[in-house]
Each structure stands twice: as C-alpha cells, then as structure tokens.
Image (cartoon, rainbow, N blue to C red):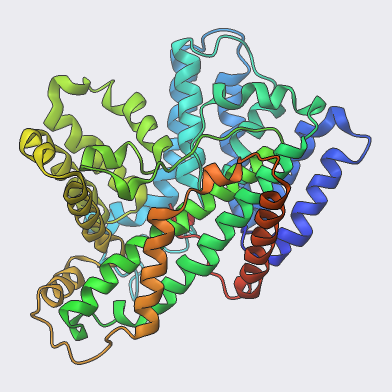
Length: 459
C-alpha cells in the first residue's frame, strides 16, 4: 500500500485513526498501531512482512530487551542478521552477477544460482535495516540504557508513515512520543498542520513528480535521438522529479506522524539551493547523511583520513541506493564533488552565491543520470547532451517546458513546511488558505488514480 492511493487515503487511514482514537482501546494504541503498520506493509507481500518481523524479533531478543549493555555476541547477531537479510534481498544478484561474474548478469537462460532470480526486494528494506542497526549500536554503546518494551520497539521500527522511505529515525527521537501515545489527543494545530503536510506532499508527488515522469519517459528511452536542448530538459526534469517524489513522501510522512503525536525531522532543507556539494549533503536526505556520519564516517576516523573516508562512505551511499555499478559510480561522483570543493573552497566561495547554487544544482542534476542509465546508455545520453546525438526526434513541447517552469517555481519558491505550521488569527487569511488547500487536494485527487509508486520505495 502506498500513500497516493484511494485505498490508503479513504480506507486504511480512516480505519486506523478510528481504532486508535475513537474506540475504548486507549491503552492498546501502541499495539494497534504496530499491527496496523504490519498490515500496511504486508499488503505488498507476506514475505515482505515476514522479513520486517524477523528483523524486529532478532534485534529485540538480542539487544532491545536487555536492561543493560548486550554482550558482544548478542550485539554482533543483532547487527549481522538484519545486514545479511539486506544483502540477500538487495545485493545477492549484484554480488553473483556483477562482482563474482558467476552469471551473465541477465539471469535469463541459465540455471546457475537460480536461488537469486526470484528474490523480490521488500520495499524500503534499506530504511528499516538502518534503524535496526542504529538501535543495536546505540544500545551497545550505552546511549540507550534501559530495556525497551517489545511493542514500543516494534512500533519504532515499523511505524507506517516512515517505514518505507524514511525519515531514518533514531530511537531517542520518537521514544517519548511512543510512550505518551496512550494519552495523546491531537490538537487543532496538530490536525491542521497534518492535513497541510499531507496535501502539499500529495500535490508535489502526483501533480509534479508523476507528470514530469510521464513527460520525459519516451525521451529517456531514446537517448541517442535527443538534441542537446532536449537532453538538458531531461536532466533538469528528472532532477525535479526525483526531488518532488521523495520530498512529497517526506511531507506526507511528517503529516501522518503528527496525527499520532510524532514530530519527525525535516528530511529536506531546500537542497537545490545549496551553494556547494558539501552543503547539498547537509540538506538532501538529512537523516541518511547524519546516519552515515555517525555510524560510518566518524568511526572510520572522520577528517583524519578525509579523502579515503569520503570515498568509502559515498561508495556505500551509492550502494545503499541501488545494487549496481552505476549506483556505486554515482556515490563516487558525489565523493569527487565534495573533495573537489574542499580543494578549491577559497575560489568556489569567492564566486557569487547565485552562480555557486547554479553550478551545484547542475552538477547534482547530472549525477542523477546514473539512477536512470547504465554506463553505456549514459555515454550515449552524454553525447546527445553535448550536441553529438542525432537530435531528430523527441523534442520537448511547449507544455513540457511550462511544466518544467512550474516545477522550478515550486522548488525554489515553495515554503511548504513553514506554510503547514503557519498560525494566524486573521480570519480572511485563514479562510483563503483553507480554500486554496482544499482546491489543491481536489486537483490532486483527480490524478491520483494514475499516480506511480514512489521512486525511493526501491531503496
């Protein structure tokens, strides 16, 4: 089940809200939300839910239930088991075919390693695996000192608003919200902010991200047939598409969490306004950046081995996004940008701020090509990008350029988090805002039936 479905908006969400807040089951709210979250996830497949539950049970038994620091063996098990599940489901084919070269890479017409051919990647396994691992590390390091009740821990891992695509949460960020859930009653401010977040997120996903995807789909499929202008259109359109797709999900997650008393952190801090590559990673997918910093970069030695550690962690970030060499290259590409900025920081910072942001946005947008193409296709596309394609077909229409312009305005002018929590006593402004939000929601609903799954579900 996904947020941009009628079944979620008008069946699942009303039912879970009714069960949690309107039935005499207040003391069982944590349990109800956990069961509801498993059902939400399990609709996509029984095996997916089984993987999630197995990870929860493993980490709880070997780590969370302990009143003190777990033993080194228990800690190792609570980290290794979820990690092995992630490797099997997400990377087994890549390891066998792409690294060990024991298969032709297509998994067609061969009986070798058939075990890996029917593996279906559980949606969002990278996200909840990172939460399982971070809890185990925090428990072993003493940051979590007391035992945790099973359903409280299970809800932390499985809570449906952030289960599939984040934000990646630390236990301390939601512990109090989980404990006070039985007594929580959403205020008017909570409800209005939640509705705003959800409406904005759905609109960005359905009206912008999905329409951008439809617009560039035939162009992406024929990279050799693009003129330079059309290729640049694809670069920036896909950059906005993946941003609005993920940002839209994050806004919906914040809104849904607020309905239940959870204050999720903002996962995006206007990343396309970043002035340099390092600044970009402080703004894009913020909870992943902090996770990588705290659990990989700093333990590796941090700035003491700056270049090596940057290369290592960004290669891992690339693999986290996808099992393929193009994702590894994407990670190393960003590592190179960050290292390059460090080397030429005095010169870069001297450039006018608007030019800094433009260069950063363009370099980041070019990098997204490796989410779309393998190396051969990327080479063909880059030839078209610099005028060496045949340029005979698939030029963007006026309507497509207008869509790109609207997307740019929505990206650089929108202040969705601020608008969602805006308070005012001015009746006219309040009525106008409510009417605009209602119109936006109705317009979004007209296109929901054609909406696509969120891009980051595959990660």
